[in-house]
Length: 372
Image (cartoon, rainbow, N blue to C red; front, side):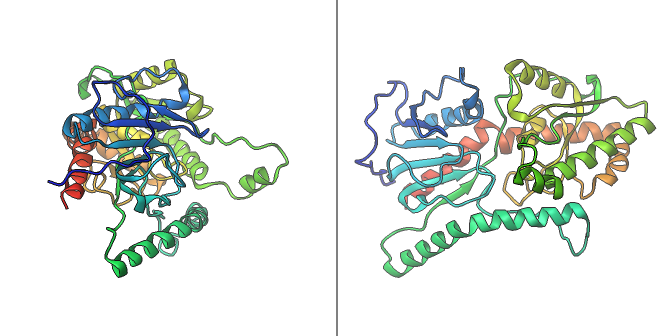
């Protein structure tokens, strides 16, 4: 196996002796923070999203110790890194626009949440609706932001093919994981109080009254708002009709307004639920899917993109929230199906999406690249 080269421009910052590779966080205010991946206690709420990735990289460190790798983790840094080279690995965790990083051909590999292909998730011609119409508009908006990176990426591959000097950029999609979800003792599905659970916001965007953005938002409600309003309306109708089932529904001001105590309470209620409703946000992909299966909840989702960790998953996809009542009744009146889906969710988390599984995926890809 060939050794990975070190980049001469790598920042010279001292690291803990127990960590043989080097890890850095790139904050949204452009700071470079030396990252102790074994310290998951974060004082800054802005870094709570990094908890899952830190645990993944703990496992990567064990698999690839001594390789001299430099890992940069950012939420959405796509333009530049502090250093480049055949030992540099970038992890981009939060770019909902599915863009391709400009530096993809200058590093060993890029691992990216949300992937690098915009996902429409509906067919306006087959299923005409206002929600699908605004989904198409949002998709086109995202695709326009995605296009420059795609062109640059394709041109680089063509250049590599013609010169035969450089390898193609390596970009891999990984799960979003959870948002600093506290570890909670596993509860048997039969002992859970709530049959159906949803806690979240309808909209967490705040624009000044009378502003152009506020006008556009009121004129064309984003698909997130359309979807969640429809889901909540259908869930309340189900709750009124099927009073024997326990529904836990709580609406919040916004995802990023949650405190540590809110996160703990959220996790406790999720662990006490059988089914978790997972409406789309800005993207169809959300932390909620992974939080649900980690706790063995049955996920009911909208459309999901074709990624290796979604394909054949135990998620029950629903094209229209008008079908929610029938779907819930079918599941909850069949205890055997509930137990089966619960076990499938736990298995899927452990073998596809857990820190150990994703670390093995990353390590295998890096091993494969470095051996060529």
